[in-house]
Amino acid sequence: MENLQAPDKNNLLKSIVDLIDNSRNKVALAVNSELTLLYWNIGKQINEDILKNSRADYGKKIVFELSQELTKKYGTGFSKKNLHNFIKFNELYPDIQIVQTVSAQLSWSHIYSLIYITDDIKREFYIQMCIHERWSVRTLQGRIDSMLYERTAISKKPEQTIIKYILLWNTDDTDYYDFHRISYSKLKKIIIYLNHQLYLRSISYKSLRYFNNTINLSKFEKKVA
Image 1 (tube, one colour):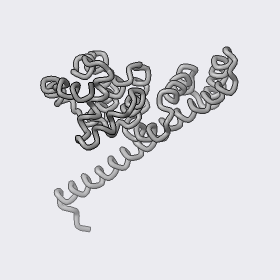
Image 2 (cartoon, one colour; image 1 turned 180 degrees about the vertical axis):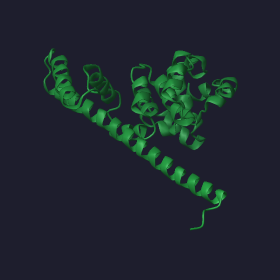
Image 3 (tube, helix red, strand yellow; image 1 turned 30 degrees about the vertical axis):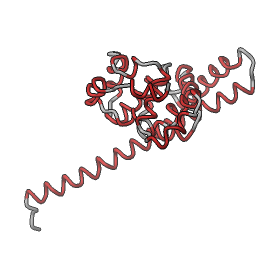
């Protein structure tokens, strides 16, 4: 049997290695997405159960009992702390469609690092940076610790102006007046739940310096005053 030439063998090997790696990456992404959806659904069911039983002590008691039973059956991963994380995740993102979008792009570890950020715009900023810059969890945590958001132009402007500015940036003049009629509470919901329409989605880490140096809110503030 004739041996393959070295270049032929190397090309074949590389092709197979690429297939294996790509397949494994797809499996890992699918598993991560399914786990994140599982955690959200667990949080949803616990939240709904707590709402039905509105006694003050019920929530703490049921979370404790569930964590004991689930840990006994499935091992680590369902501690009382983790169940509270699932509950928080569901409270923060009650819309399953948003959760499906986020879970397809961020790992549960990313989401866990973000759900306790109380500022909606700050959290959205980091979500979009993670997605578009492909940050690892370690990089994300480092950026949060170094107060990256606080060092950008976005954090230095009043929240209402920020929201209107972001919407205007992606809106031509013919659509502007529709946004002008939307209430502030509605605008806030838009920035949280319709993040695919936000300018933040297109920011890259490399462009932040440019963004800080060139952003000029004054002309937009005149339009939305």
